[in-house]
Image (cartoon, rainbow over all chains, first blue to last red; front, side, top):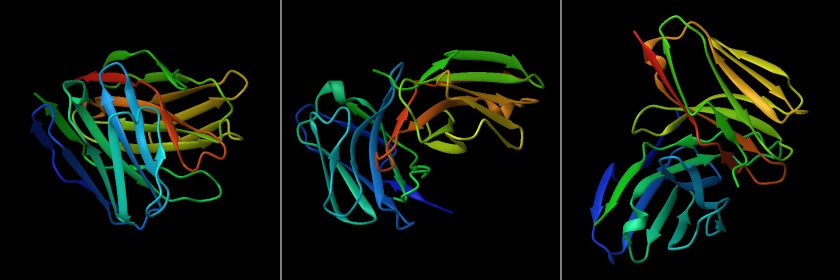
Length: 115
Length: 112
């Protein structure tokens, strides 16, 4: 079975702190994604990566950065956490195939509270 | 703007009844996928329908796709309390490298 793990289920941080969210997948997927999920807004794509050291901005990249040094690991970084970044963060991964019919496999999510 | 919009936002039914959820989208797609999310957890892929398909079945799930109306529906037959979850449609656009655009979801409650 595909497994996508996230470093924390729950996280409480203070405004201004630097926050690292880690995601690891074990299926040799090329693509990895970071979303945030807020009530009434669904899932919004923050960043994604289709290869090591490659990254692309999603719909809401402001206030975030990412790092992909190894194929299996994709990190989301909040350089200076703010209260409006309190949210559920979901990581996902998928194969990159010409057919474009990849399904995404999700981690369990990290619920981040910024005080 | 949202590519996928779902209707209804919330649905409450009795066990044994069928549940139907709808999804509309705006641009041409490669495929449309449905995902399920149990409360506080990650999403799980349910079913994928390609743009050249009209209907697909998987167990108690039936998905239809009408590309002329840019809409899809997910039918869960003979629902169970364990089907209680949020359901999301997601569209894949051509040449977008595997990116999906998710709708806001339908929250389904199945009462025993």
